[in-house]
Figure (cartoon, rainbow, N blue to C red):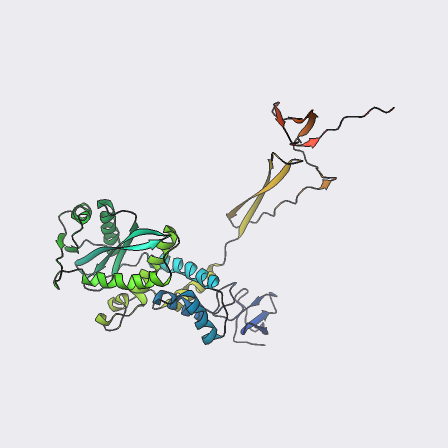
Length: 375
């Protein structure tokens, strides 16, 4: 009996014993609640340790393709994981990282640099807008759009001001005409708009152009995004990786957020650890399942059918689904009215519950046979 491990379900010590291994991962058995679980640092209902998932997340946002991550996990941890499973980790915990850092307020300077570039989304060319603080190298906001209009530029500026909690004194952009009115619509006369000149070092967009080079290296490896929703999620998650986890030489080999001071996370393992703690402390919400039976009439059906419609809601109470009603000789024994089809020559005549009549080449309900006279 292992007294150091506490059951994550009943929270009782001195009741846990080893229960064999699965793919090299030790499993445990709680003698009190009669439930199995893996190592303590695993997420609930997941067999893979947190350190393995964190390593896969870091490799993905550092530029490695899925097949290379698969080989890395097999060589480093002796764990085989499919590429689809790794991509599921990326999408799930990327959304978790974005939601946990959306309220973070960075300490930025008064000079911001904005630019746009083109990325591939589902075979289409999409414009990716972003704005960065010149002092701290912190990426304030990003925006994805199909066009390069003034509304897109103004929306980028408003998102950056909301994240920083302030308006800048100077905004540096390129010669795109959309920035002229976009900066003025967002900040008015509070910010000075400076258009950079080519082949200059002072007041240029070289900082953000370097970021675009890093971003395109990442999107080139994953062969573009599948759709707009995936593109927005993974680019936002990549901004989290860039701001909180990626080291910068100009900042003394520190991420921009860590250079400012206190940060919510220091790496992807920290994100997963916070997720595990929340799931263990709050528990998973119960699921209420309600089942209703609605008649579905098919044009080629020989009898009326009932398709169960399931509606799932989150609540503290659980309602068990009703059992399907019994069938006898192909007929449904229920209180609902059944359709009866009568053959009229080459067609079938069916009476509806509303009093109407349907003519079809095939019976829509139970076929009523005529009584033959005995000789």
